[in-house]
Image (tube, rainbow over all chains, first blue to last red; front, side):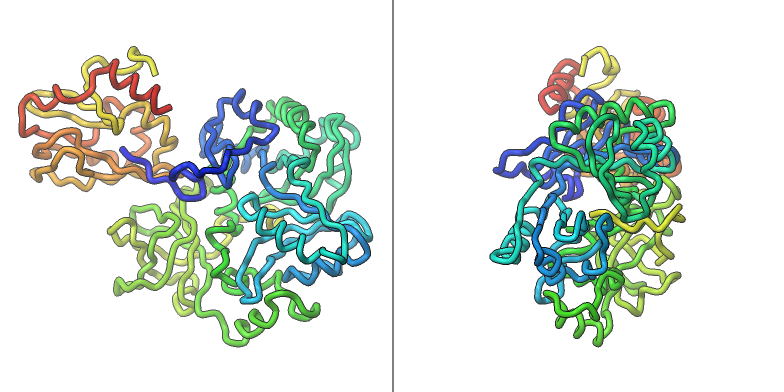
Length: 388
Length: 132
């Protein structure tokens, strides 16, 4: 028995760089987590089991350590302009206390990273980026800020804990008077809140398809917050959730994962992220290329599919037409704990992307039938879009 | 892993298969250590055909959990005499009962004493501890 791990969990040869740990590492170990290398970090892939954690988040609530993600701060009168020139969405419309999801593209229109932009004040902004892209995105915004606004990489000082699921707000009701008012925060809103006597910034965002929040907290305060929240929610069914279930949860909601659905070879329009590309906001890096791509029309589309035959599609598997010819690629695939089906996300030629279209997945030499389906794979409780 | 957690009537491989002698056959499955590493098993594909010959170390099928896919390797060379078809519809049997109900294939070894070349309980337990 030889495991072929998906590449996002870094089961390949260990990299040379030392692996970093979040401030919650001891908590994970205490909970019996299986730790794996991920984007230069040692992160929990699972605690009690992927399916168990997945179901806890769908039916009750889940607590996630996502402290590995990057937090960058830009401030000054020109900070908003600097950010808006580098992203596809329009941050100029944000009020203080509002956030938005966006892509950050290169001149070619392809995706450097997907981000959430937070406007904390008139001249104060925060960007959250993927851990795997932190160096790259720090480079982009440090260069763009030069001589125009202040730039700081706050990632090493900032921990991030996500609390997601239908009972997330019930847990917060028990976390103090201030926390009990968190449900007033609108989707993609955020504000400073004291949670369990800890000063935090709470954003109503997430990456699971469930309602819930993401809580920014000082690096060293994270363990106290984590353990108190877990204890407060235990009888409600709150569980710690690792990267394994984080992946199956976001897949069911068809939220893209950088390195799979989007990367430096894919532009947002074909990824189904046209809604975060605002051509009318003025110039931004990648605008010309994206406009040309829009006029030309997408040759391929990012679709969701279900396996019809017995097989599980995995990242990198070939997608074939019914004649057996290579036509696309699977970007993510897994059994779906919520639907009980084997689901996948991948790129197919536009003419094969309509719901109901049958095609084949090359599962290590076996050609297994699959069909394009409507997404998200689950009915979302609310339009919670995405974190990164 | 403690030696006492392993069944007394089996031999083991470094790839985490077990093999139990039943008559002229060696019955093969995967160990509880492997099951624990894989997590929730969602698909077992046994590609080996009854009557066909397989070489030691060659894949006779694959097993998939939510997160990963693993090959299953023949512990010895021989002829496939049985395949557990029940696992196609009930992959969760591997989680529930890996040493009995979730046996995978039976092989009639080319060499009658082939099982002697496999790991005993103590050696396999030590191998698991080293790998962990």
